[in-house]
Length: 179
Image 1 (cartoon, rainbow, N blue to C red):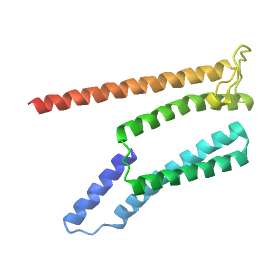
Image 2 (cartoon, one colour; image 1 turned 90 degrees about the vertical axis):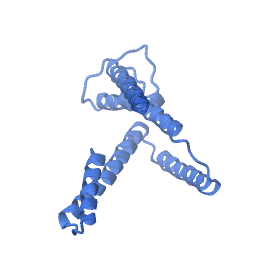
Image 3 (tube, helix red, strand yellow; image 1 turned 120 degrees about the horizontal axis):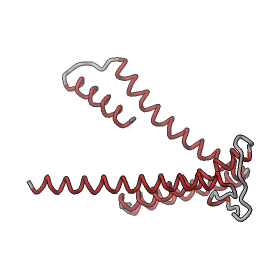
Image 4 (cartoon, rainbow, N blue to C red; image 1 turned 135 degrees about the horizontal axis):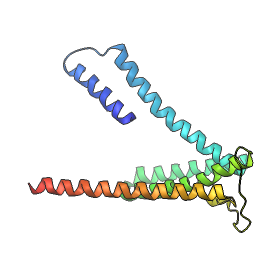
């Protein structure tokens, strides 16, 4: 959504500039608001992500140590990429990050429902035979397991739909080249 709106706003601004017209305050304000919205959304997602981690661990010191360690690792990765001209293959990079995000979706689904059960916002049906594992968001409640199964199914369905669309686009491109 943001990309479509941004592309439309930039195209409109570019056509005005090319035709010799001045950009109005409204056009500049809309581009500024779109930029703000994109950055704010990422910041809000980060805050929600860290809040979820903190609510599961209640370890502020560990979060600071982890954050500093992550920053150090990112600096090292940046320096390696910057000064050794290592190129990250985009396809495998996004595949790995997509797999990590898919796993986090399932983990957070279990953790989120568990937090609602612990906060007495929803009733929980306890399963004595299921172990608890905070690392994978596994909790001995029917509701948490159901949420994780639904999240896992959604992830798999979205992956399959994306693969089918990608395959169809590839076939369409090949058919277009054959003409």
